[in-house]
Length: 224
Length: 223
Image (cartoon, rainbow over all chains, first blue to last red):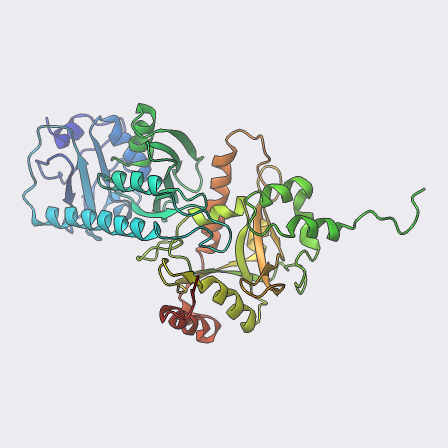
């Protein structure tokens, strides 16, 4: 069963049928573009809700936050549907898929370059006592970035303690999240604010712990 | 009866004592919250060369110079705003003279040889009133002080129109304190992101000129 079939067979109470189906075949970690057409997915409220609900389906699927309006996924901004499915998928035969995939890869590469640049900052680089970036922390973030799949806008920085931070944001909805790499061994602090009007949540633990993985995928909409 | 001329320090002296020499102290926000409740030091002149307390009809400029604060696509990082709950968010008051802005920005543009060359990336502006009008359980979360800072290479000289924004909530010992502090830092960032300008659009082109000098290598620290 591929992820698209799963979505169509497991509607929640609020789920309407996809009036314009997602292309019938996908592959793991593939990215599908709406290709300029409107797709009506009636049960979408906000992208974090979408991320959480899809994660319930075991195979996580996300939609680019910028492409979402109240109830519609529109293709006006060439929005992407990212399908991160587990098994038995085939490729989407669309040239746009490759474009979308390369865009994500380009973004990941640009952020890796940025992290390496930040590594050269000395202590007190801000004139306000910030610590020099931690090489171990930056290396851990670089390893994470290499596999990152997310619909959210993301960027990287270092905090005052010198730890690498990957930040995610959707300014329209107020969604905000970050992952701080507290050492080189996988200890992370994850923060998540679904919107400006909903309470935030935070977890600290090892990146490969199931609790942390669930927090990342179900709340933050992040897979790595 | 207490004799007149008591040696008890005045509020202003107490407030100044907390700030003095603590510009880089990551515990400064906690020290302020602990010793001075409810932003009471806002009514005092805490900076030694300040023209006076920050008025609510002023604006604050956050001049972004460090490459860690903004990426190549113009995304303004959230992490640096967490300074609001450590050593304070460093800003320039709208009452600053062009000479003060030049001094402060020049100090920020100096880099060590192994660092990327500095330049002014963006200017974020916020209304002091909007920051002070925020309310949360426990009262006002943010205080704005006329905190002056020493010049980087001019011993004894201060930038008089610098200011600091500090978070005073939630108090130490609160459950999920770090998470709540991050919430407030995000809220403060949201306020500053309402007004984002390029360096060409403010201070009569001064920031463009300073950035050009920095990118030519004029502000490299020789060690």
